[in-house]
Image (cartoon, rainbow, N blue to C red; front, side):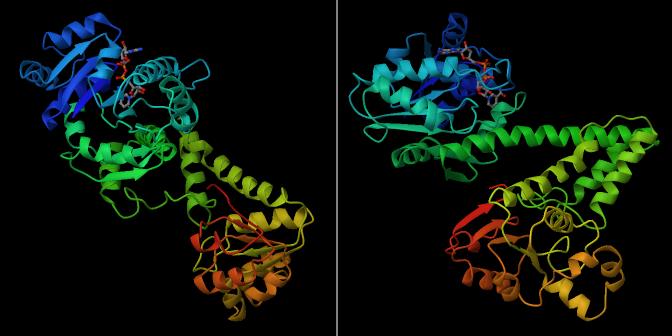
Length: 438
Ligand SMILES: NC(=O)c1ccc[n+]([C@@H]2O[C@H](COP(=O)([O-])OP(=O)(O)OC[C@H]3O[C@@H](n4cnc5c(N)ncnc54)[C@H](O)[C@@H]3O)[C@@H](O)[C@H]2O)c1
């Protein structure tokens, strides 16, 4: 394929070096004449292991050249990758000036170019930017709509400076959001020989994944550094602790606990978080991120309450009271906190939790119930149907398949607030469905 690459920084230069390896012909474009000259001299404008050799080989075999002539590059290619910088503005939103300028100019050239053309944004932008912001600019410039010999794609770049060539050749996955079907097909051809999963999604999801990856990496680094600083204060080598910690691929380095849902609770997580924060405080080690975990967790309970209250003071059926499904443990359960908040604010509520009910029948956990939540005990209903009978709003903390079946049967005319993310409650004929964070 004939590919034009706009912006010869880290991302663009690596594309210029690596795309010819996949058999493509590349034209690099930059407003900086030094970078253009360097490429044409067979040298890389960025310092990265292995990139000089790749660029030199590509230029020598006439598979790569650079220019400052945007129009010529667009006319001579079928796909344009845009990897100009998106630096942070004063409010930290990405500055789109360069991206907008390039997209507008490409659009204007496309007005007079026969055949079809695909524009692929590689720069990191906020969710919604490609479709809501850049698409109208492109269409206005080109004088035609995406879908009419014109494709618009967002394809995030995951390379890390320092190992960018290796990362280009072995990406964790290739994520492609496209406004139109032809965009996906072109990207499949462009990356045909790149290993790893090819993921088709929307532009906004692809933009979000890229943002979240960097936020998550930052969070991991902060976690390791704060944890290490506290452990060091107690004479421990955190590198040894983290080495063993990371060997747990089931609970620690895994998708577990990364599913959006309700707040954490139970007899271990809140207690241990508080305990670790206390250790830090006693050693005078500031850990601003970890010290705020519980604040964040409470804010999530507030969010659930606000969502329920937003519909007015309606009668509520709450499903789930224990801190997670499959247990009767109500210690530090965020659902108990939510139920108490609703009762305290004058909501009329009925609760169903199969496990709590069973343990109550068996006389287990009785002491806890009598001592801590006797007021909630009175609100427990023996069957899901009896809780539902009462409800205008159905709040689902957790519910097994049989209980959800019952909810689905009684959903008509009622509002569902889902704190757990059950797909089968989404389209069950309720008056409305809302997830807490989806
Ligand atoms: N650097 C990374 O490791 C990395 C990784 C993934 C994603 N990203 C994202 O990719 C984008 C590019 O990052 P980078 O580090 O390569 O940026 P960079 O600042 O190194 O390079 C940007 C290039 O764009 C050129 N440019 C500016 N306006 C132009 C125009 N109108 N026409 C042509 N060229 C123009 C600049 O001269 C510069 O050479 C950013 O959105 C960044 O967030 C960067």
